[in-house]
Figure 1: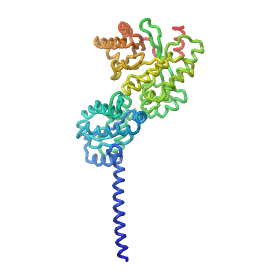
Figure 2: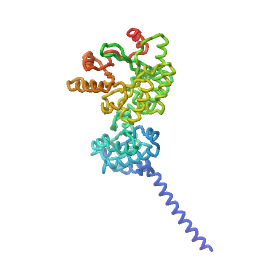
Figure 3: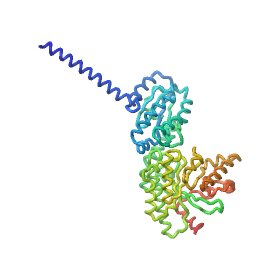
Figure 4: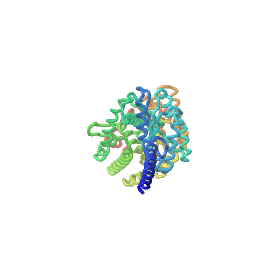
Length: 457
């Protein structure tokens, strides 16, 4: 009888060991493999990266971190199933794009992928990733729309292979954050200077909510002038931040960061409402002939579900005619979800708002794209003008842009005009409006109000 029990115990233990071993294998697979993409999990990446780098030479390898820009938008608009398919496609595509180059490839978070490769082919890898038209085509086919997928990419050349893997990942991510929101698939390589910039970003991020609450973000106006008679034809609302520690901050110090972290939505809506509130005060004070005022709305804020209804409601709250306001959309916005942007522009115009395309010439848009955009105004980018004005060939390019825009019935505004020569040259090309330091610098609201009284009453 005892022998029989002993046999059963042995069989039971054998089965138990088999179950435990099977469970361990499943647990290991669960922990080490990303279920959606089939690539390594964060835990597996840490283990394999450490094993690889323990025997590596300084600068032999680099770590690359890739984010899908605005991935939340894909989930919200096309659904989570489509989002998962995009991630799987990207994971497989990276290896197809760089055959034999990738030593480790893993998905770390929702839309973040990392891989390690040898640095000897760094330039080729960067070139392939930054100009990846094939991926864009695949995603458009997958989603069945014209959605233009873009990536943000950061790289860290591993100078000290013994360094903690998490620190290396931080370096690559710091580099990646410096190119968030830029056009195309930008790539940045980590440098120590980026650490100092990150400290500045932390200080800005920590203070942004309190800054909005305490009225630290203040509006100013930069007038626009008709080139035909140099009369004021409008003004653009700009924002400055009176930071309690860092003093007066220009928009370039915080707007790109806010677009990255999403705070730009709150700031955009605050600026739009504050502008409407100010215009109502001026009207009640008897100030007449206020020119059309333009307000920038970022591509992030345009992603809000009911953005047009929100803007209409704010204008109505302050008893303003919508045709007294102009919504400025940056050129970079046109490169993503063109169909949706066209609908938003049409809705804005149907509501009575004017719509302008800001920073034209700063990215990759062309008049062939603009012909499908029902906008009213093109604002030629300051940098584009300054780079092309120095040569006859450049001036011909500007003239062509102006003439072709005229054929599309678009009003032309030239930004960043700083000299009389520039103003006269643009006038000879039949440019409609100019904005820049030659005519007027951005000024406080009170100064602009006085200017209206002097020039338009």
